Structures are given as C-alpha cells and as structure tokens.
Length: 188
Image 1: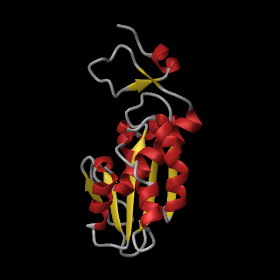
Image 2: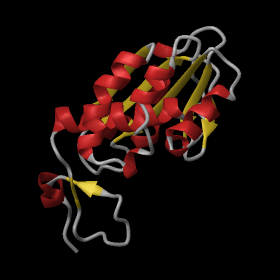
Image 3: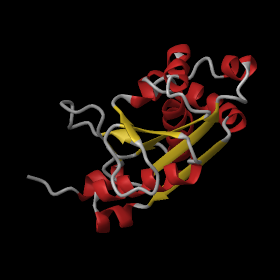
Image 4: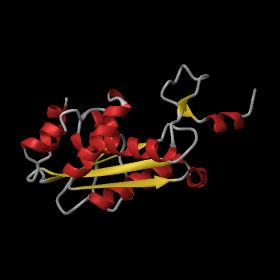
C-alpha cells in the first residue's frame, strides 16, 4: 500500500510534502490530537521507503504496528509535530473550531516555502499556509498516513489511555467513549 501513498505525494511536484490529520475527533470525551509530518522527497532514499513499507490507513494497522512505525516516522520525517486540544477547550470552542485550529497549527509548524500541504478530509480555512484537502487522505497520501496512524493516534493513545467503543452505538461503530463520560450521559 505504501508505494501508492508515496506515489501520490511525489505526484504533488514538491520537494517537501506535509500531511496533517487528527485523532480523537469522533471521541466523546478526552483530547483531540492533530499531527503533521513533513517528508523531504529529495532526502528520502530506498532504505527510508523500505522502513515505511507498512505505512497505511491507520484503521488498517494494528496498534502494535502503529507503535512500531512511530519511531521510524520520527526518524525518517524531516519534521513531525503534534498539537493537543484538551476536552475543556473543545467544550468551550466546539469540536469543529478546535479541530480546524489544531490541524492548522500543526500544518503551519511543518510547512515551508513551496511545500505541498495536505490535510485529511475537508478544507482548512483561515490557516496561515495554503493547504489542500485530500478525501480519505490517510488512504491516499504517505504524509497524511504517517501523521494519522503512526503519530497522532499513537500520541493520543499513549498519553491518554485506551478509549473503548460505546456499546450502545452499534449503528456508528467508529464512535468511542470512556466509561466516565458514558456515566454522565442523561438517561432517557
């Protein structure tokens, strides 16, 4: 899978390709973590590509594989940044505004003049660097996949513990909640 991800990034025609994604947006409690990774395609060699061969959509990687990829991404990437927005700030500002702010800050931190700045999903408005949305970016771009699976998800999971799926939401299996939060939900 990683060959097509890297091909997409190389197709951007830039030396530097930056990718940003978040973890925790679908979470009903806890922080939101956005991460951005910058790859320098003039510096990456065959060994770097081989070491990142398992890079893929984070949902298709086991937690063990994501954990193993994190040090590789941090070593191979030209730069990697994470931004954490705590739950209390999300409650004040709203999820969408918090997500946009976190993704924007992460992308601004890694972007350089002439870089292709890619973000998973929707367009970022009001960000200090030009960016391009990539639908299903973690399945399309190596930089976004690195930010998503190996980095953002690992930072969120490692710092903030495991979050479990809410058992009452089988219609939306991607939604997750922590036990404390589900106890606070109003009962019908």
